[in-house]
Image (cartoon, rainbow, N blue to C red; front, side, top):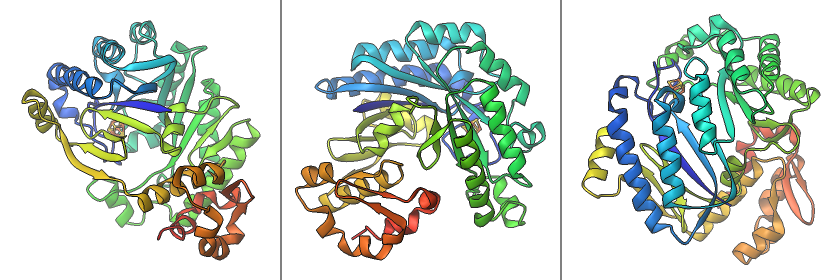
Amino acid sequence: MKGIYVHVPFCKSKCTYCDFASFPKEIGKTESYFACLYREMEGRGKQLKNKTFDTVYIGGGTPSVVESKFIVGAIRQIKKQFNLSKNPEITIEINPGTVTEQKIKDYKSVGINRFSIGLQTGYDDQLKRLNRIHTAKDFLICCNMLKGENKSADILIGLADQTAEQVKKSIDLAIAGEVNHISMYALTPEVGTPIYTDYLNGLLPSGDEIAELYDIAREYLSQKGFERYEVSNFCKKGFESKHNLNYWQRGEYIGLGVSASSFIDDRRFTNTFSIDEYMNAIIYNKAPEISSDIIELEDAKFECIMLGLRTEKGVDKKQFNQEFNCDFDKEYKNAIDKKGEYLINTPTKISINPEYLYVQNDIILEFMK
Ligand code: SF4
C-alpha cells in the first residue's frame, strides 16, 4: 500500500497544547500556499509516476478552515498528477465550527469518503481551556451534516482535572455522532506550548494516572464495539484507517506541503516547517526538504518491529524474514527472552500482550541493536 499526505497549515486560532505546523496568523497566505502546493504535486507526481497510491489524507492544521475550492483543487490536482488505485480512501480532517453543508458537498464531489473530526472532549469548559473553537453541540451539528458518512473522532486524555467518567462521556458523545472510528491520544505537554506551564505547575495528570484513564477508556470502547487495532486507534469491525495502517506497515508515502514527511524508496525526508521557506523553495524550483536520510538495513528492521509492535496484529515474522532475509527468532532471541512476559510469540508472529500495549516503549527498545 502507498499513501499521499497533504498538509494544510492554517487554523482559526492556536490550541494551548498544539505544536503542529499550524499558523492562524498566516491564513491570508492561503491562496499562494495552495498555488505552491499544486506545483509541488506536479513535480512529485512526475518523480513518482511509476507508483500507485491507495490513500490520500488531507490533514493539518484545519483543512476545513479554508474555502472548499482549495481542497477540491488539491484533490483534482492529485488525481491529475498521481496514479491512484481504483477506490482510494480519501480522508479529510475537519474541525466542528468550520464546516458547512456546502463544504461537505464539495468535498464529496471530488471523492472524499472519510472524515476525521477533532472532538477532543465532550466538555465545553475543557474545550475552552484548550482554546478549541468549538463546543460539544457543534460536534453533533457537524456529525449530523455528515450523517451516513465514514467518520472518525479524535479524543484527548490527560487533560487537567479530567475524570474517567468524563472520558467515558466524551466517548458517548462521539458514538452519539455515529462515528465508526475513534483515535484516543494522550495530551503531551510540549516545551514551547502554553499548556507546558500547567504541566510545570503540576496541574496535569501524571503518566500513571493517564495510563489508568487509558485502560478504563479502552475497556469502555471495547464494550461499545470499538476494538483497538493500534495503541491509539479503535474502530468498529472493518473501519480501520487504511492510510494509518500503511504507516504502521512501513509502507511508502509522499508528504506534500509544509512540515510534511515522506518515505519513498528507502529515503525518509521532511519539508520545511516555515510557510515562507516552503513557498520560496517551490517558486525557485527547489525541493522544500530540510532533512533527508537513507534508511540502512538495521534501521529498517527496527522500524518494522517498532511500527508493527504498536499494532494489535504485531509483526508478521514470515514476512519480516522474507523482506530482510534473516531469522527473526534467532536474531532477536535476547530481546524475546528478556521481555518474554510482555510478548505473545508464536511461530508466525510476535505482538505485545494487549495489557501492555500502552506502555510499549521499554519493550520495543529492547529490539534496538
Ligand atoms: S486545531 Fe489542531 S492544528 Fe489547529 S491549533 Fe488546534 S491542535 Fe493545532
